[in-house]
Amino acid sequence: MQIADWHVHLSVRGRPRQMRRHASFIRQHLSGGMMGLFGGILFAVVTGGIDFFAAGAFALLAATAIPALFLRLTGNLAASYALSSTFLAILVGWLCLWTGGVDSPAIFWLAIVPMEAALSANRRNAVMAASVSVIVFSILAWMSLASGLPPAHLPGLDPFLVRMVAIIAAIVYACALAMRTQEAYLRAEEAADTEEARYRVVADNASDLVTRHTMDGTVVFATPAARRLLNVSPHKLLGMKLSDVARAEDAKAVTDAVAHTLRHGGETSVEFISTNPGGEVRFLETRLRATGSSTDISLVAVTRDISERREAELVMQNARDMAESASRTKSAFLRSMSHELRTPLNSIIGFSQVIRDQSFGPIGNGRYSDYADMIGDSGKSLLRIVTDVLRMSEIEAGNVEMDVEETRLAPIADHAVRTLAPQARSGRIVVQNHVPEDLPLALADARAASQALNGILANAIEYSPLGESVDIDGGSDDISVWFEIKDNGQGIPANEIERLMRPFERTGGSLEARPAGAGVGLAIAKALTELQRGGFSIQSEVGNGTTVRLAFPRARLGHRKTA
Image (cartoon, rainbow, N blue to C red; front, side, top):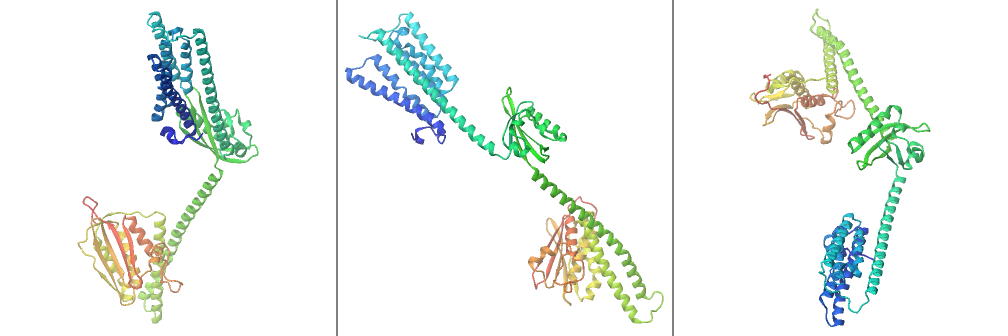
């Protein structure tokens, strides 16, 4: 029979078994109540009236509908059974009161009251119903001994026949209760079997191994996944312990995990290596959880194969180690080669300077002096490249330390303009310094800030067309102080800016079209600025030049000495 949601309380809607129990209780008690109500009316019509005894009996019978209404409103099945048992005991007591007290044919029905309460599957209800029956019986016995009973209300009926009918009715009702109890038990058993079958299907088809253990860790249940994980049948695991399937080095860790779970509860995880009878090695992870009461505790373990995960972790670790080793090797190589190259380059530059200055007398031919100039310029250019590569390798290796202190930026700008004046003159570039002398102090490493500014200014001069100008400006706000270097070159496409700030990235396409240098100027300037907790940004538009900002934290009172 289909049960509509409105038939039962909101709390059990959507739960079929609970809905059936509630609906059955409501139907039975509403039927009994309706029988009492209409039975009383029919009795009055047929007999031409109704006395006090009959009115009370039919009223109490009609009152059996009250527990049904109570259940519909509250959803409390246990309390509804308790209320029903109380009404039944009062009804039986009322009948006994008017039909002979303890000698009444209906007295046997007091034994039925606790049986009906037992249908609630609540021990407290059954005890309470039995107590109510005892109280009613005690009242009847006291009134019988005190001769306080009203006259027996069995006019014209054979007492023996009435007693037999009452006993038979009680037996029939008791049999009906027994059948209802059996039906409820069978339903519960069927539901339990269904749930067990459902969980067993899940367990049997799960890729993880599920095991149950006693307090000492002995396996008492194992799912078929044991064949896949451990290459043993589940029944062979029975009587073993988890530590028995772990390698000797991991057995103690597994045993400790079991003990920790038993002592502290919650969930414990342990990883170990297992070698199955076929010689296959697997990495396994087991999660343990204690279940049951304090007097009957057991463990449930879920074990899964993590071999692929561990292998992936090992591959990643090896790749990481190789990459770090390659990076260290590269940095060491660059440092070594840079130093090896700088030594002969210094000699080339020095001797070319001697020849060019004719320190030991005239050369005799003007071309030698030109060649010496070319040798010197090429050597200096190569030395700058080697120096930049060495600096970049030091930054990547994390070997650059900053001596940050309160620093004035105007002298750094003046020094950069003087240093790069020869390069600017050779390219007929006008460098205009607009950095104000009263610019607030910055927190910076003066040497690193100077190197960053020199690199950006050198790039601006190199990429500016002949006869153009490069402007250096300065500014500040509440949190930072900055340089801005603006050139009037061809500019950088927006999608190229991020790439050019990486080491060894160059502008231009072919090697012939690229300017001289190692392609690390922007990367060095950016890294040095950011090592001082500063900010590095580029704004550029093709055809409208480029503006680079080097920003440093603004100094506050109480910092170190002024540079």
